Amino acid sequence: MEKKDIDWSGLGFGYVQTDKRFVANYKNGAWDEGTLTDDANIVMNECAGVLQYAQTCFEGLKAYTTEDGRTVCFRPDLNAERMFDTAKRLEMPPFPKDKFIDAVKQVVKANEAWVPPYGSGATLYLRPYMFGINPVIGVKPAEDYQFRIFATPVGPYFKGGAKPLTLCVSDFDRAAPHGTGHIKAGLNYAMSLHPIVEAHKAGYAENMYLDAATRTKVEETGGANFLFITKDNKVVTPKSNSILPSITRRSLMYVAKEYLGLEAEEREVHFDEVKDFAECGLCGTAAVISPVGKIVDHGKEICFPSGMEEMGPITKKLYDTLTGIQMGRIDAPEGWIVEI
View 1 (cartoon, rainbow, N blue to C red):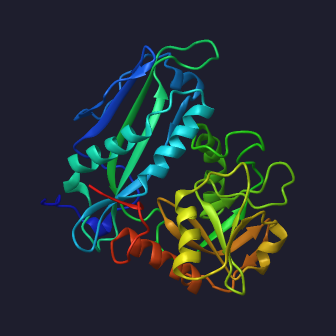
View 2 (tube, rainbow, N blue to C red; view 1 turned 135 degrees about the vertical axis):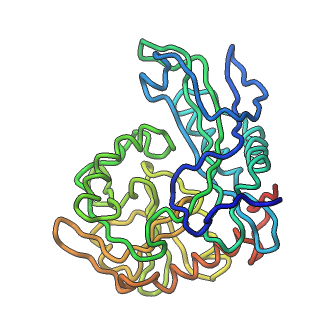
View 3 (cartoon, one colour; view 1 turned 90 degrees about the vertical axis):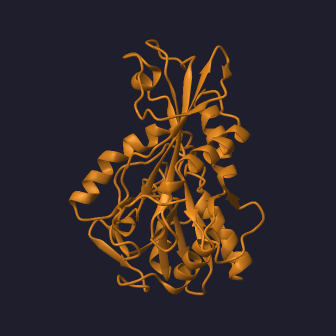
């Protein structure tokens, strides 16, 4: 497969329209078979449920070119499962998990020329999403839905790639204790836009959100989970009912234990213990792991010993091992890599 003539290494994390996308419709109580289409536009009624009451959810995953030239995806079954759970919470008809994985394969295969070459630092990002499409004026779930997947080649999520970030502790709440923080609903990200704009204006890369109930425990950022490394090399990630269960985080915790022989635990992390960690990182599909060098709490700086120049040593091992698995340089656990 001849690749597109693109400066792959110059790509940022932005939208580039590719050749094909998948579309399926839910009508009269059932999903149709769905199809690939050239049309990147969506036509809907002005009163569509998604436009009135934000009834929408999404996922994010990537396709890669491995070292030996194969095109693969990383753990799409977990994306299918998470979207299934999200849809149920939003009173949307879950898209069948097997059809989700099949649709992912169709989109990657149809856009294989857009999958960046091995070693370019870029990947093909896939965005499955679903929304209420029929007119809804009273506050209630829609009756008809559309499920779609588009693909776009992307570079690093954060400018500068692996250079450590500076975060600030946000005065805003990301999610209510019994709200929708644990699902990938579009509305979660809408409410994070103002805080992230304010953070950027103040010179920070992202926000650290604390729990809404007590504001004493670490939750996540607007789009990534936290990983901390203790001074005795234990990997710790916050546990909370109101953070998104990141597929990348789960994979990194497995890698820490099974590949690197490290102790790894998911537990409540109190903000007052953050100063005692040796390393900090943000993990998610888009960035894999982005190192954090400093967190600013209303003028008070928490500087991690790993510094502001490069990833800490344990974070680097985690990053190298997981990306090695994704790129085919390291043998993957069974079921993690799906070949297209």
